[in-house]
Image 1 (cartoon, rainbow, N blue to C red):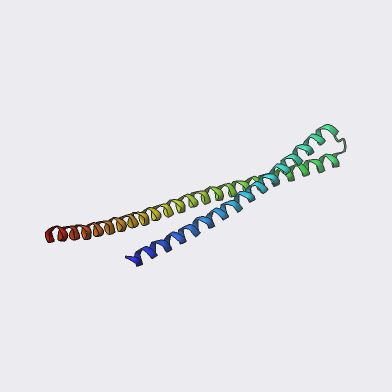
Image 2 (cartoon, rainbow, N blue to C red; image 1 turned 60 degrees about the horizontal axis):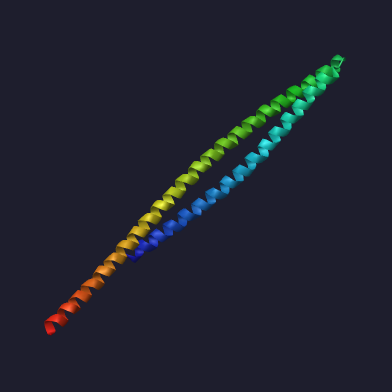
Amino acid sequence: MRVAESHLETVIRVKDFQVKKAQKELAVITVTRAHEEGALETLAERQSSAMSDAVRKMKTKAVDLQTSQAFIQSLSRQIQRQEQKVQDIVAQEDGKRGELLEKSQSKQMIEKIDQRRKDEKEKEQERKAQRVIDVLAQRMKSGL
């Protein structure tokens, strides 16, 4: 029986390690997402600023107008790439949250099984002790 207990304790330690590892990975993903969302916001602000500058200045030269338009289009493409990056990270984050939940539930299940086994062993020891007490009481009674 001791082998089974130590086996479950080992399983619980492994599950705990897996949960902590998933938590750390999720934290890294969350920080990365925040960073990428900040970069996206910066790009959007630059694009908005460039568009309002273009409208405000109403450039008269065709070359200036083409340059401004090309810059705005470049920012639009960068924003699209950045939005995709953020979406990918959000999907990764959601997946990691699901993985963390699954690992936490698995660990809790093993802990419950371990606790049940410990409770059963304790009850069995109490029953054995009670039987010994009963036998001793019976002997004392019959000896009197």
